[in-house]
Length: 358
Image (cartoon, rainbow, N blue to C red; front, side, top):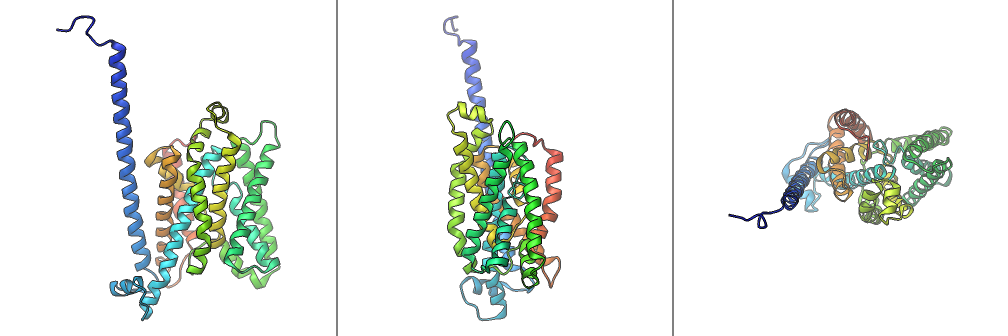
């Protein structure tokens, strides 16, 4: 029998119980995240197989195997060969847009924020439209630098406009400034295109957003920009966690808020600007994917951003497959399909989940 002095104190017992509960909670969260990660990887593998196998021309496994091995000796082999870079670009674009959307939402602490709302897409698009119409740019690398410059200048302008009022660039002011800037830049892009019938078809098709016709020559130049963007945003994940607590709290914990915001914004602008240069502006991926991933892994950006990359790649690849199949023998650009898929999913998330605070 324990004497009074040998009996564990109540606070010690409660402390051990709390520690055990915390450990079990962490294990459950880790198991849930690992299961979600495996499920997303499996979905991505299925999406890649569907993207390579299905299109306007029916092909069999021998043709798929021949194209994957680099042997292009028939029309079927050639059809599959053209789908491989298209699939790779869809994966890259979905991952980039998913991550940039998550970063934008964390940066502004606004659940409705994405690169489109903050004007980044519109700035990149306007820069390319001006480059094509006035300067005759036609090289992928030039497109990328032009788009990144347009996206970066627009992001700086939006932040400056939002900072003019007393109290600085609050999340609400950033969102309002971004929405107004997006509307103005979109109208300006239309004004630039209207008198140029010679490029109107090309530019308007690009503005819809799509991955069709992708070639290695388009993909390879964008890879360094995407790599740098992914690295910067992943390094900024912990800073986004602190920013989610509020600027004052983040500063009190030793975080340099201005540097954290600048670092996050640069990573998001690189990702969004580079992929917009190649694919055109594609909406809803950066808006919907981070919310869906929050349902799976919570709001920790160290987990949220990698999962947004995976989920964005799955969504865009499957959307591209759907766009090829539903209007055969023609195709729908993936930017149209993501709008049809993303809008109802986002409404469902908003109606079934409290997203008021990030």
